[in-house]
Image (tube, rainbow, N blue to C red):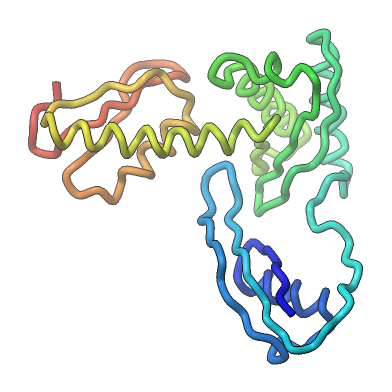
Length: 224
């Protein structure tokens, strides 16, 4: 029999397979089908295919994705963001998207998601900034809040990675720099990180304020 499982790591996927199939880990063969590295706004995952000669009934396993608050801070953040959305004149439900070390992800489910996200995510950025300020007022300056809706952060990250590589190719071909659109600190850091290991291309931020621009230029070439 063949089954498929996913996890954030290969070990987690195999552990989940063993638990749901009710088998020892050495009781089945594993084939890696897909691997996705983790990024700034998305968590990595591994998809495996399990082969076993035994026909088993899958064991019920509770959902692995956290959606409900587990402590007072999370509930305060959920109530705060829902209150912000309501004051904007819209309705929406906020839940926990993920938990990591010193990072909490929240998602907004709303029929007005496109408005709450705003042009190039600026409304979502503003809501996220307020959520982080509120967390600081709750005495948790050490916690970073990531706010998402309709998987915008993941889609934006993937788009920026593609943009970074495309621009790097243009810079290589033309030996001239390219100045990107103004971006928030998170998006700029993604561009810098994506191109950091490309030997003949460098990046730098230009401008003042929160929304600066990233210039991509050929190393040793014309920076104009």
